[in-house]
Length: 388
Ligand code: KIV
Ligand code: ZN
Image (cartoon, rainbow, N blue to C red; front, side, top):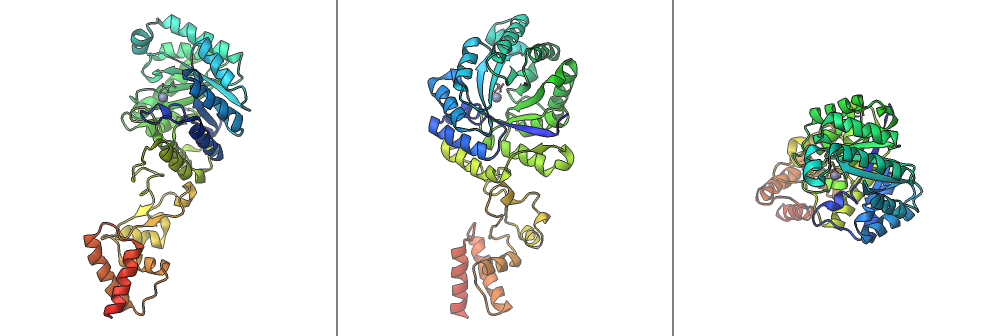
């Protein structure tokens, strides 16, 4: 089994399905270029058959982005697949991603199809797609809530037709890490030709477990592709967030033993670009890309970090694209952090007694004010020298 983890970004397709996140062709192109800069392996650029706008966006991205595989989603029918192939014609590496639902609920209530009809349609769709494109991904929508034996039959059949990637979506975010990971493992065991495909996970975040489920799919299930979005953008509660899975696999390489090809220094620029483009604000305490992800406010933590960063940091802010970590001065800050900030501001007080007096003033102010800015400190010290 390969020790490379493929990162498949679907910000421009599943991410855009987030209500209010729709993007123009130019905006999508800008994000796709940033994803390429970040060395994402596969960029799902859109759903070509869904609208002329999406078709044009996929086409433009396929023409402009050369270092990542460009993918278009397509329902399991000839029209959608042909449209995807047409939009992808200019790509240096193209992938068609075709899907059909396999859970009883979706087949009966939504598709109004029998199991055998779904199996046939999936098989024919992959056969048709494989004649148009060398790289085919198949997804059984609502795969995780599907009957595992039926799902195994579908997977076996589409692999026979040439699907190189089998992606098992937890479409409604119903998974629990151990259970989802175990499902992927048991499914692979039931599919006789499973080693002819790369297995992929695609998790939604309805119970806040998209990242944990994806990682379990990798660790317990043996998946080697994760589908994710920048900032976890996506329908309802969103998708698995790229920055979190990538940094989890990288930071805990001791546990996962897998390589990711992502240039992590491009993560924060990508997060900011997606947030500015969609207007979706990133919460301050969001892992990796939130404004507070590398900020220290308590005196004990500040003192520790000033002595040795790894006391309270498991990753470097600079490694994910922040300029530096942050020591936020406030009422919990200690004398050391205060002194350090004076130094950074080029302020040299004459004696320790002066530092102490300024620190007392600082604490008084911090009791009244949430965050202390550099201007506040300069004012404090000036006051100090006036009264001294
Ligand atoms: O969540 C889902 O099931 C999907 C598929 C179309 C892959 O996004
Ligand atoms: Zn999805």
